[in-house]
Image (tube, rainbow, N blue to C red; front, side):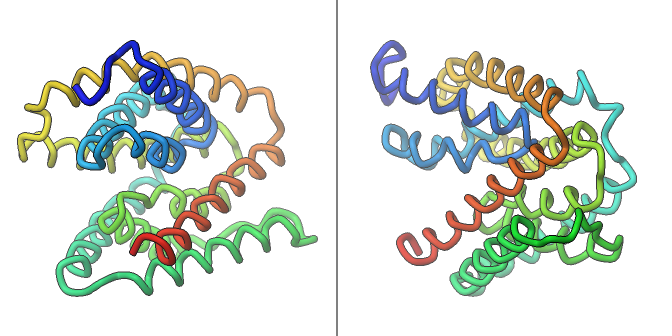
Length: 250
């Protein structure tokens, strides 16, 4: 076990997980964005990724059991096949070349998109259905490259689905599919034979449950305009994270 379950380090991680899944409960994505930087101070990355995959999958399944009928399956049936194709392209890019420039370009695009959304005087605009192709492919590519494609799907879905609850559960369904794929891969690779990973995921679960409960109830009580602002803030932070990765990590 990397640290004692009753230590200060564990308490910091649990508080972080609560806030990470509060955001996840509201937006349907963003948990890894918030949790990973803090968890990385106490756990190796090769433990963090499978732990968060398990917890994300559990959170998605819980929300699907509660609200699954509200998901927009017309959007999902187009996104998932393209997501898979994008993931294969991302894997090929990872094997053939360094994807640094893609990180920079996407980070700049995401930040410009959000700034435009915040400062545009026009009302909420809706994307054409044809844009499902580039957004789904790019989301799959970045999921394969860096394990973070949720904010890309959110950019598309927030401009396609008017109802905030339908958006939230549709986004969670996509994240659930993506994390299920990752969990199966980790299972086949024998990653979950490590009991420490399972015990830490179990210890983190109460924070996740409280977080998604709180996030769901906050979403029910706020306006769509406020909800979209929250989504755009999380997307904006994702863009900043990409620029940080390009300039300081890669």
